[in-house]
Image (cartoon, rainbow, N blue to C red; front, side):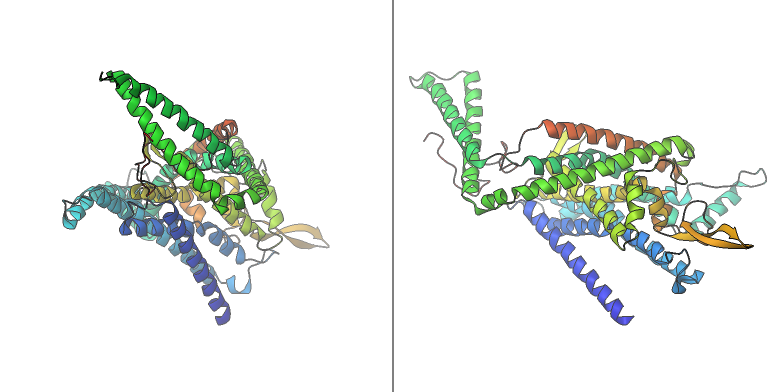
Amino acid sequence: MAADLAIGWSIFALVLLAIVAFCWVYIRKYQSCQESEAVSTITAIFSLAIALIATALLPVDIFLVSFMKNENGTFKDWAENNATRAQIENTVLIGYYTFYSIILFCVFLWIPFVYFYYEEKDEDRSSCSQVKTALKYTLVFALVCSCLLLVGAFAPLDIPSGKNISEFDKIKILFQELGSGYGLDALSFSISSLTLIGMLATITYTAYGMSALPLNLIKGTRNVHYERLENTEDIEEVNLEIERLRSKCRDGRPLSSNDRKKLYKLEEKFRTLQRKERHLETREMSGWTKCCSIMRPFKIIWGIFLILVALLIIVSLFLSNLDKALHSAGIDTGFVIFGTNITNPLNILLPILQRVFPLDYILITVIIMYFFFTSMAGIRNMGIWFFWIRLFKIRRERTRPQALLFLCMILLLIVLHTSYMIYSLAPQYVMYGSQKYLVEGSTIRNSSKMISVNCDANAPDDQCTVTRTYLFLHKFWFFGTIYYFGNWVFIGVFIIGFIVSCCKGKKSVIEGEVEDDDSDLSDNEEPLDIYA
């Protein structure tokens, strides 16, 4: 037992180390070299690591409730005691408390504080002044978090409405429920509120990333040699236009205001093309470009695999939502569904994979990580938007610290919504995992034969254990209703994004490396003479 425990902790430490290493490499890859700052970098790495680790909560929860029972539907020897099962459930609940509390802390306190601290950074201001201003703005987020916790703690979910019950008795019942639930309602309401924002981020970024990432891998990038030839032709055309405009004032006559504006725009375009030329020249001579051309078939295969996973998710989500629309308990219950009436590919695949441990958990983990990395791809391709206003761009070695903080916050919110997405894809599996229970079968010679069936809503409470994820998701029914309609919007956005991604041409080999608003010295090189 001790040896198994030591091996388990060693694996956990290695996985944790790998996650932190990946987060460090990813943040450093996109972080601006000119605006890097230690506090924002550490915050971004920590937040991204928490988002990745939190994705493991659902598979671990499902594994633990499934591991309590044998394949024949009986409890294992160590899990026959109700106290033992309750201890495991409480341990999982503590895990949810811990990670969800850390997410609340990051979203409402730490990330806002670091963001505003960096925004107030100025040579003329002291660190003390920056901290005071950042705390003042962060206090607003703290008040919002406190309000959500209070509403969740005292929201009257099931208060008796008899005439003989006074207002004092109702308040007393509210406090009793708060104590008996150990703050579960307060935390669940706060997390569900953040999950609504995560749903919007999932609809915006994940739905687009699920189509953009695979299709970009399949289509590849433009040929660097031909792209450089086109860029050289553009430089010559712009240079000729600049010379034509300057020839107008060689005799001493001043240029008109329209010509001056046009000349300024042409000079800016010329400088951008020069920077692009430097990047293309470097990329053409790079050995990495040659390696990418060799790996091209593998990228196509990987892109086809990812698009198949996307289609599996979308078809399963559509059929699951259709099942809820036709057979759920209704809109006023959050479209809770008991049993599966319309099966979907994922519901068919999971029971098959359950026969070979641990293929079903690997599939769930792959889907969760797929959501995570397609979300990162969607944010990277689209940038960070507030309605129709583009706030930040995510570019390699050009991303500002504020943008990285926004990126990590969005990923934290998306991770929260991922649990409901998985529940929408496979409701019964998320509730009970691979648990089975015994029921009476056919009767032979006055003796009934016991058979094992998969756990569902009709199973006795003492025979099947519900995951803690399900309890968090369905504490407040109205959130389930909003999530249900959000799934339909998600499907629609994916279809639109798929069509747009198919119509778009190949990306530039230096996509995102050169923009019009870059400075001349952004490449750490001397600017070329525009009149040479």
